[in-house]
Image 1 (cartoon, helix red, strand yellow):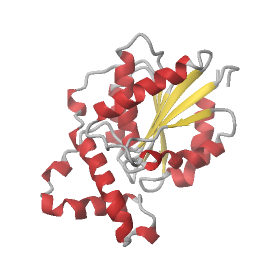
Image 2: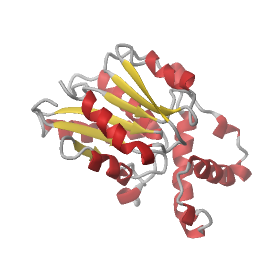
Image 3: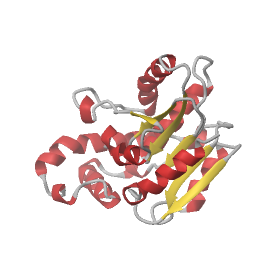
Image 4: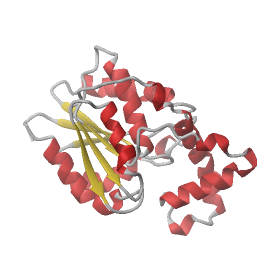
Length: 238
């Protein structure tokens, strides 16, 4: 690690909050300053409106990123996205590449989501949508077992998961033509997403795109956060 301050901007999964990265942050020690973003309508921003598109996500975070970098002009930074956070990260990168007032990140860390448009949500009849979203979220392991049948939990969080999934369903990777020389590290599990789909990130990160395979389900970070921390730290050395 060089002597410059290193910031890591973190984007959580669908329905997730900034606290999702706490264990990874602890595993990295004090060698990186984590900037754990909170989506509007989530966590500490629960009272704010939910997003309807990733354009709104990007428009929310670009000013925050610029302000933080302007206040830390001697710092370098990287970005980390997990699941839906990988799409949020990518859309933010698209905007940064079109601007002259924000430096590019040293590296991006993409996790648990392929660069593939997922339109299946659009085919779900409205009458079945709540049950489909519940099942998808549970199957991913995104809900604590104690909350699976908690009506109060679902009354609060179902609308959040639905809004996030609908954003994912409407994001069209097929129409995006971006080639970046920003180095990328992609974390994935073959059991969650096949390598052939994850490999498509090479289409956008053309200079360097490394892949790190883990075992397990969608939230493999829960088991491998120490190893992910090691790789992040090693990747950001001189």
